[in-house]
Amino acid sequence: MWFEQHPAGRWREAEAHLRAASPHLARAIDLVGPCTLAPRKDYFVVLCKAIFTQQISTAVATVLFGRFREQFPARRPTPRLVLEAMNGNAGDTAFAGCGLSRQKRGYVRDLAEHFSTNQIPTRKLAAMSDEEVIDALVKVKGIGRWTAEMFLIFTLNRPDVLPVDDLGLQQGAQKIFGLKKVPDKKALVKLADPWRPYRSIATWYIWRGSAKMISATKQ
Image 1 (tube, rainbow, N blue to C red):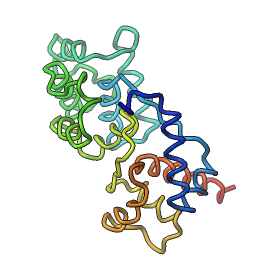
Image 2 (image 1 turned 45 degrees about the horizontal axis):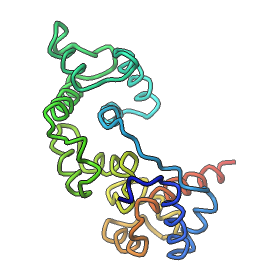
Image 3 (image 1 turned 180 degrees about the horizontal axis):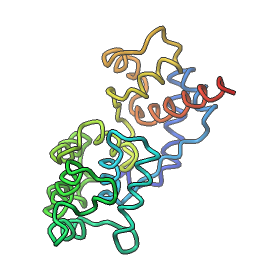
Image 4 (image 1 turned 135 degrees about the vertical axis):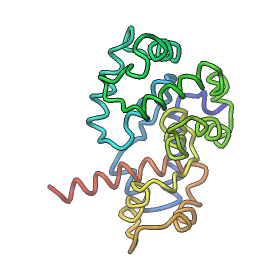
């Protein structure tokens, strides 16, 4: 299957397709360089961090998540170890020193329970469709469609995901394509149609390309 192949060759094909689809994306690709998306296998860790990042800055979340990881052997949280800690003497105060609110502790517990009971079938995720993966993930408290889409793009490297609710994509598309206003969902879907079957890769380039353009204007 394509998702079991090394990503570099696949992304070169995607870059060629996107260059042909849009001169605006071609300029973004020239600005950013080769796509560096690579698959990850630590699904539970990725989703734990996604919960940590909710409603706080990335920098703060990185520090707090680092403290969380320090609670585990080899800094590797697992569903079993998380549930053992939360069901032990610490109870609801487990990981409170890591900046987890009571609500987020509930989310992490629910995530661990979904993994431990195979409600998120880790061995089958790679073979599941995008929507099947999303349906499995959004059943976890605290995980919505946007988080599931980020998981598809950055962890499973699915090539044709279009996160229409992502503000960074909306604003980035305005900048990259020189639009008069930020595109709404309908406009974004229409704009992205020629990017198929590589809308994830186009999204990645729009994120990175628009950030570089903004950085350049500040210098």
